[in-house]
Image 1 (tube, chains in turn orange, cyan):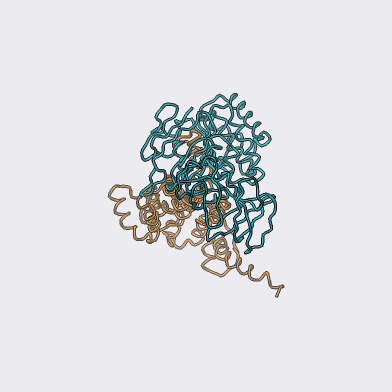
Image 2: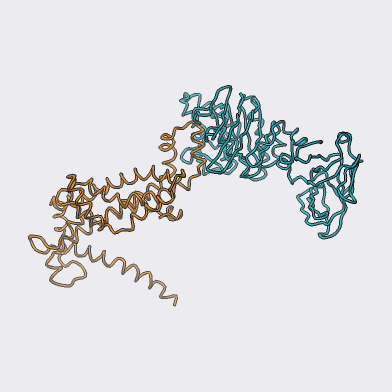
Length: 266
Length: 355
């Protein structure tokens, strides 16, 4: 029995890595090879797919667009959620608990529900096909999430810290920036990560609210055929590149997320 | 420097946290707020600091009405029961932070921080972060921050409660000396009567949101104004029982009675409540006024050189606190002696009549 101990983790990792391997495998093949034969590794290794993406603006602009609205969204969500979470964690006011729960219910409807009203609204105010439009649409579900995460971290900081700072002479804004934010910086990291992630993977709203100028990479990537026929190798290369930002971000916040799990809020 | 409460009241919703209170704290002295948990000590301190606004009434400081002044505008400092320091600053910056806010020149900051750090034995730790300190060191850092800025009012909210026994004793000895000759008014909240006695100064006894008495600590201990003050200022709890005065004799029950002392001669024949501190009930007779009382032993506790014995007489539980080890069998009848010379008497309205 002991001799087969390696079996389960090996299978687990193999199955986990298989789709990623297949994606990478395809990205280094020509479309003909992908369609023509079943090969476990590229017979005719090519970097042409990647070259196309890095040189053709319709491709690389997709990354810029995605990163732009994801970045804007993360900044908006966290900066709006910070004061909101502070209020929820420090003050008692009429209906505070209901409001807090209602925030979360915003996440319970599928984004598709909001696609139509957002599309019509942004068209009417001429914000259709802009980065800020997508960023604000994504704030709908990211702000409540950020408030929930940050409230948990803030409630872990004793109220006496605020009092001590006021007694020492700190004004509220000064205390918040100089003392409080550094104390909950890991919470901000976790909140920012989740905002980034949900905005990065969201496709439906991003696709609906854009046409050319702010078209996200996921929308570019999922068109299966173009004027030059099937370009499976190209799509695979784009997919491989799309994994990178997420992996990059998660590498930086991995320790914070562990802390967030320990606090029971993530 | 005086702090005065004029009919200060604090209500939160339908609950009254502090009943209308008049209190005038001693000029530059050491004042103690003594009360059990939830008696309103922290609320009182918040009202004094200005972290909380009174629902009604006025707070005066140095002859000025500061009721509406925010805490930043009052020159106060505070130390909490929890060890509160700024986690993102090292010890030096923690102590220096009130001075930085006041825009004190850097040279003077260095000088003053070095001074208080020396006073509180923090000098070797100045470069460390608060999380790298022990509990005692963290609390000393918080105290140093309270000391460094020369505040008019220093509020200490059970600062020693979370420390272990040895450190607590050590720091308690230091505390009054630290604040001597600084010209600031110190308010020290505690739930332990013994701590109040050790610290001296003046004491306000707090009972369910009401200041029952304010005066010199030792005087309050000896002559509590009423039964409530007496109960707040006693650990273990004071024994109380109804007695009847008949002529020159106080009668507790059929077998226990004693002759009234010099001061009680003038009291009329009536029903009173007698209060006897546990250390005035002993298993051995002491002095001329010793009165024997027999009861069933319920519990005995030993704390080093001391025994605390609970016994029952006619359905009422009594507590005796005696030097030495007294190994009574639980359930047996045993004889104790009340020191009738040290009894205090309360009238029917629970006000002190004689001590």
